[in-house]
Length: 304
Image (tube, rainbow, N blue to C red; front, side, top):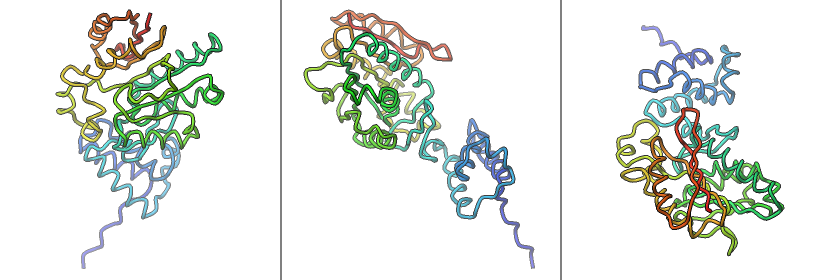
């Protein structure tokens, strides 16, 4: 009689080694990191705990679930969708296919928006209105709501967020509610600055937007997470600037006098955005902030 096959190892070290090997063979660009994140998720622990407890054993049910997660990742599905969350800006953002996964570079946009709102709140006692366009998972709106929770509760700041996708807005509401700020942000489903989410006739003093800025060709030919994320949140048209162009046209009539719009853009798009801003009927002062890679990532447009 042939000997029975040995049972698969279920200790943390063996699981990490096995998952790393499979994901490397599948072409993952970060096989070890992916393996540690997924194995850690199976243990409900972080990566540092795994390395401190390599002998820890995973029960049979969790091991089966882990095998399914690794298979999904081997097929290219992003770890953030497999786990159902993404660590971003020191927050845990719920993630699934309803919305784009928050990117590290968007933390610069969050920092810029926080600095802009904080400076305005400190300048005088006038109420401030802020509007995030294309909120997606609600990550940025959540960061603002948590930072300015007191100002929102006191009415010093009003915060609205919109998205063209009703499914994305559902996810945004879940993220806001999970962090106890669901009642502090007004959400609306519509295109760009529609529908109004701020009390009439108040105009936004700060507009924040991370709109799609990849080209259609980049999205169609994309690999990795781009195969799984909603193309509506990625495709910016032939030059990547379709929605940014549409939003810029709206700014003169919607942005408060002296107001600021903060836009995330792609590499090499700043000259085109400057040109578009220069063609607007209302003067806009344009500056930019580079990300850690030196890419001009956030454009600041201030209405004269």
